[in-house]
Structures are given as structure tokens and as C-alpha cells.
Length: 189
Ligand code: URA
Image (spheres, rainbow, N blue to C red):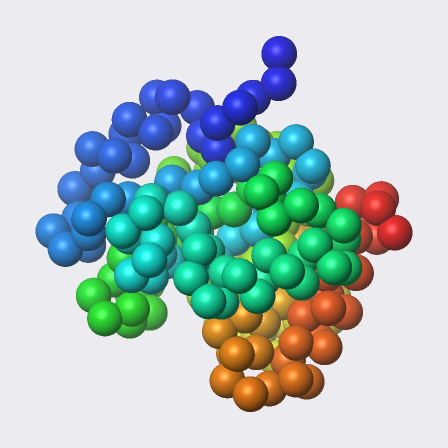
């Protein structure tokens, strides 16, 4: 039977009940993810923003709309069918970058979610997700444009769509390139 949830039920319960870091005090709800991984691509962002905290769904704000459109145009994957999660499951106040400690505290959830979804390709978006998944302090500008094999996983880092929204068509072009690269590993291009 194929999975229909972004995480196994016991993991969903554990994340919903988590109070392991201070972010639980200000969140509306944790954002566990969306999609069942059936297309082989898992998109990993940084942390929920205001809209995601409100709805419980990752990447539903402006940057999410851009990301979903680019994925649809470059990979032909429908925005509704994407599988998406974040390094940190609770919104940091004022959308600040989650601390290393917060990221490390949330990481065991990611390990369990990866074991469940078994993605063929992980597309990390932005600095935080690339650095966390690749265990590096290198910045996204250096990391992107290549695919990495780590712990048996294929990881393709790209820019965060919020950067492309700041009037940077070059960043959107780079994201399109990285998506096509991910597509070659998915076997779709
Ligand atoms: N930015 C992220 O990194 N993740 C989201 O879910 C929304 C915005």
C-alpha cells in the first residue's frame, strides 16, 4: 500500500506534541509537511512563515507560490501533488532564521520523515536547508548548481524563492537550472 501522509501517524502525533524548544510557545501549530512522496521529490525549506503557521501547510505564501510555479514549469509536477517539509516545524518569531540549536532539536523528526518518504531526490531551498542537509557552513551561492550524494541521499540545493522575489531574475533563472538538474536525477528530463 502506498503512503498517503507526509509522515507516519506516530511521527505526526510526536511533532504535534513537541515542546522540545522554545518555538512551541509562539507557534499556532507545527507544520509537518504535505504530500505523500509518490513523485520521488521532497522539497525542504527552512521553517514556516506566518501563512504556514496559520494554515499548517508549508510554502503557501508568496514565495511558496513562486516555488510551486517553477516546479510545475520545469518538472511538470502539479503544485497540488508536491511533497514539502521544513528543517524546523514551528515558526520562529518574526520569521528569524532558526538557531542551530532549534535546527538540531528538530532534526530527528527529519530523519524519521526521510526514512518514511524515501525520496529519490531532495531539493533544499535556501541556506538553512542546504547547510543542515549537507552538514556544511558553506553558503547557498557556492553550494547550488550541483547535486550531492550524502548518507545515500541525492540532494540538490537551490536558492530560496523569497530571494527571487526581491527583484532578482538571475536567481529565478538559477532556480530553474537547479530544478532541471533535480529532474535529471528524478528521471523526468
Ligand atoms: N519559507 C520556508 O522556508 N518554508 C515555508 O514553509 C515557507 C516559507
